[in-house]
Image (cartoon, rainbow, N blue to C red; front, side):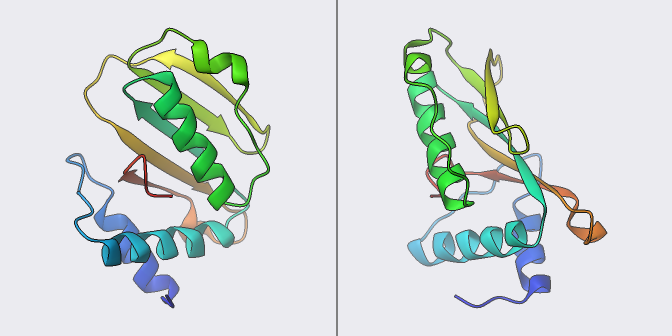
Length: 134
C-alpha cells in the first residue's frame, strides 16, 4: 500500500489519543501497518512501550513489532516465565534491550516513539496500537 508521508502521519496521529482507537477491518490494519513502516523507515530509531495482560503476550508483541521494524531481536527465553501481570515492557532500539515492570493500568497496546535527527516533524510518539498489529 502506497501512502504519502503526510497521509501516513495523519493516519498515525489519529491513533494518538487518550482513548484507544480500534482497528475494525483487515484493510485498516494493512493501512496502519504501511503508515507505521513508512514513518519508522524515515527515523533513526524507535522506542516501544508495550502494555499487556501478561509477560508472554507482551513479549510476543515485542518480538513481532521489532521484527516488522527491521530489528534482529529476540526476547530472552527466561523472561517468558516472569510473574508480572499486567506488564509494561519498554524497548530501547539503540541499546537493543528491554525491561519489564508491573503495570497497574487497564490499557493494553503499543506506543511507538520515533526519533530522527533529519526529520524534526517525525520526532513523535504514535499509538495506541493493538498488540497484534504485526
